[in-house]
Each structure stands twice: as C-alpha cells, then as structure tokens.
Length: 459
Image (cartoon, rainbow, N blue to C red; front, side, top):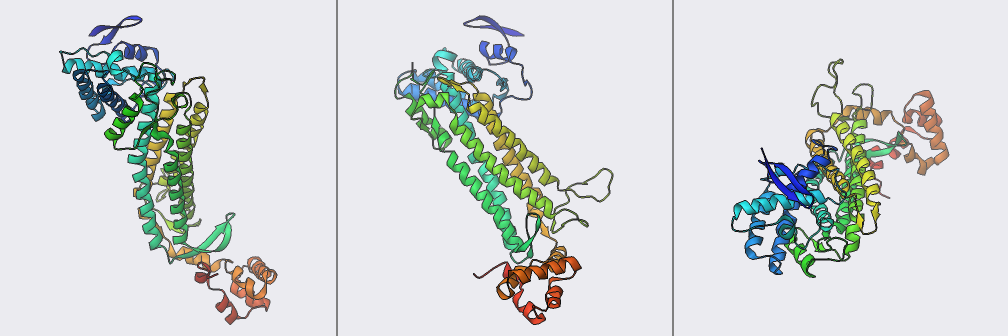
C-alpha cells in the first residue's frame, strides 16, 4: 500500500500508512548505514519539533506566514514535540552531513499532519514549514537544543544525586582513619571521609566545566539559512526564533552573533564533548578507587564492602564482583572514544559548512546518556550500599609504617627512615622498630605517633 508523492527529482512511492514524504523516503532507501541501530531518538525529534513550531511563530509575527498556516504548523509540531509521531522519523545518523534529510523529514511530517488537521489550508514542507530556514541552520540549532536539554534535564540531576549520596558517605566515614596510598604504596594516614570528599570535589569541578562549556551551545544558528548570510529570511527572524525557542524550552538561548561560524564550525559542541570527557575521567577515577578498595575479600585490600547485586561467577560459588564499577568504567571508555570522534568531526568544516553535524550530535548525546545512566546506576546500586570493613582497615593501619612521618620533627628524617626500613625488613611493627633502634622510647612513640591526628594535621 503506497501513495505517490513527488519532489524536484520526480515521483516517489511512499508507504501509505506513514506521514513522511518523498525526500524522507529517498533518504530511507539511499542511506542504509546503521539502519535499525543508529536512528534519531526522542531528544532530536523533540528538538526538530521545537524548531519548526518556533520558526512558524516567528514567521507569523513577521508576516511571512498567514496566522492560519502558522497555527496549523504549530499544532502539528506540538504533537511531534510531545512524542506522538516518533515512528515517523525513521532516518539514520549516517546521512548527508548537513542533516538535510532529517530536516526535510520534519518538514514533510509536519506539513502532512497540518494538511490533514486543517483541510482548508495547503501547507507546503519547503515553502511553509521550512520558511526562513535552511537545513544548514536548522540542524545546528537542533544540535544545541537537544544537547543542552539533555545535559540540564538528565545529566545534571543524575550527577547531583550521586554527589549527594557521596556526601552522606563522607559524613558517615569522617572518623574512619585508614592507610593513605601514593604510587600504589602505603603513605600518610587519611580518613575514608577525606577520600570520598576528593571524589565529590572531582564531580563538582567536572560539572562546573560542563556548565561553563554550555554557554557556547546557547547560541543558535537559526537565521543564517544556507551559508550564514540569512538569504531568504527576514533580518529579525534569528533573534525572534531564538526568543520563541527560549520560551518553549524554558532554557536560555540566543541568536548566534556570527552565523558563518555557527554553520561552518562546531567548536562549542566540541567543547561540551571535552567537558563530558572530563566528567567521564572523574567517574573513572571514582569507580576504579571503589573497585580497588573492595578487592579481595580475603586476599586483597578489602577495606570497602560493596553490595552483592548478583552472583559474580559461573564457576566460583559465592564470588561477588565490582560489576557496577566495571559498567561505569566501560561507559567512561565509550565517552572517551565519542569525544575523539567529535573532536575530529568538528575539525572538518570546509568553507561555509561543516558536513559532520549528525555524527557530532549523535556522539555528544550518547555521551550524555551514558554518563546520566551510569551515574544513576552507580549511585543506586553501589554507592548507597558502600560500607567500610573496619577490621581490615584497622589491621592494615596497625601493621603499616604510615606513622613514620610523625617521627620526623623529633628525630629527623634519616633516623625515621632507618626505623621504617628496620620494621619492614624484620617484619615487626613501627613501634617495635622505633624502640629497638634506641632512638625513641615507648612513651615517646605513643605521644608522637597519633594516626588520627596525622589525618588532621594542625599545621
């Protein structure tokens, strides 16, 4: 069951049950790469609907569209925004580098819906839905709307919840003194609460970097049309459309100061991707620390207990693995790879257009989704269930040489080092070695070496 539609190249048979038109169908047939795996998801479809609704409102205010046509477009675009017609957006990421086919997909679906909802009007996909626009400025606008909405609405809350759970653990573990480690070797004492505070600080810094990088994606290309000059668009269109988009989304957007850069370069998306990579690096550090602190439980460090979410082995009974850590680590690695793709694609602007827009958007959105979902899962299934293994922490602390620096002010570094080496070589405690050396009495050692105070030096 098909209907015949036409475009500038001729007639095209379109499945009768669908609302898309000739250009969408041509793209569906001509771009099979990644079909079924790399289709646009809800954030991009929603952003396309937002652009078309707000462009119609701006065009009506500027006298470029009749109010009746604009209203028909707005109603249909609102259905796209709401997610009613996601099945009508079948196109894949690997298409023309300007995103033209996805722009036309939105134009055709919204035009056909408008014509069915308002039979008295004839809404044309190019002349009306795409009025004052070009794919070259529509798709960068979609990129920025989708990325900013996902970061603010999904990623930021997920990181905030993880940070909140870690803050609760920081307070809970504030009095747990443990062996500090540098170079993977024993170092001065710290508290487990201090360790967790470092993780929180990393998350805070990474999110601050993301927020800072997002200023660039608040600038919208709309109004630049084909090459940045604004051909076939009223001078006021870009500013007015950006204002309408801000109202629609409740987010701060503005018209790009230079539309030539907005079309031909995507430095702002590359900056966001780099900031997302930094967050992935922070999460990698946190997950790796938890994984190592929990290793064992009998033959490893085993200073943290992690939740037993599922059996860890198909052959070794009772094994519990740090699976949430491993899942987050893998997600972080994928984000690292995505950022490489974005950085390379963003470098490929030629003259007045960068034709790697779809892959830039896809990778940024995938990074945002992986980090959002990764933070939520790690928070709910790992962090909230973390517990210190106090016996193992005490055993490591008492058997360590981490108290040696406390001797430095009293007997000097050289003698303190000799005592530490003596303890290590003879397999005795630092206290025993200090007394055996003759440089320190038992009472002096007990007075000078207070591990709890070493974790909170007064100086």
